[in-house]
Length: 258
Image 1: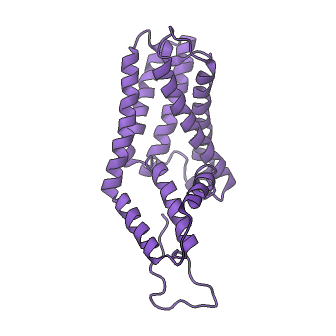
Image 2 (image 1 turned 120 degrees about the horizontal axis):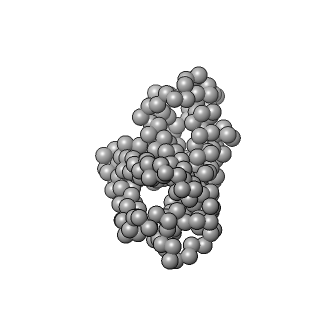
Image 3 (image 1 turned 90 degrees about the vertical axis):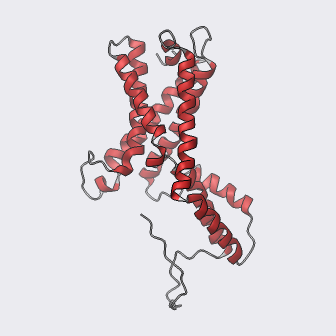
């Protein structure tokens, strides 16, 4: 089962051109949705304005290339900003699982779209592995690690707008796995699972302006900016030492982390 390309099997009833067009539309959703989010929330304006301010007020020159590498390795690749180890592991499972799942999907749909082109089993296995990693990390987070569930005692079925990204991502990977397994096993209701898979994917990629999807692009920029501010001495989000009481106006503003 884990060596059969589900998209090649689907090509007997759905044209590969339609599948490839669908993937391209999803990519465009992400691109234009992120641009809309940047313009609507003025994120780019904020970052560039703050960047100039940090550069002008900096007390010393910094090695931006070196800090960018540190950001990529520490803040992005290992998600070091998470103090809770369980939350960090769940996040890494979801992040790397999603990357593997997306890459494997593109390879399977564009390079091996029909049974006529033999699919290397490793790509099929990576597709299943990526989706499974997302599901494991995502459901672990949703039912056991979330602050409002683990610490505040709220029901895991309590849903707010901020949960849109996580839920649509979990739905996409869950229905994708169920559809692929059902199609391979000959389940009569596998077309229903396929429809749910496609609807979930549209919600995930089409809902970028209203979800936290675009945060995966903003967070590395924010982490780099934080490192630059710390390195050149312009960071102002901490109070002064106890032996140096703050004077009026000595701290511009303490950002609120919501």
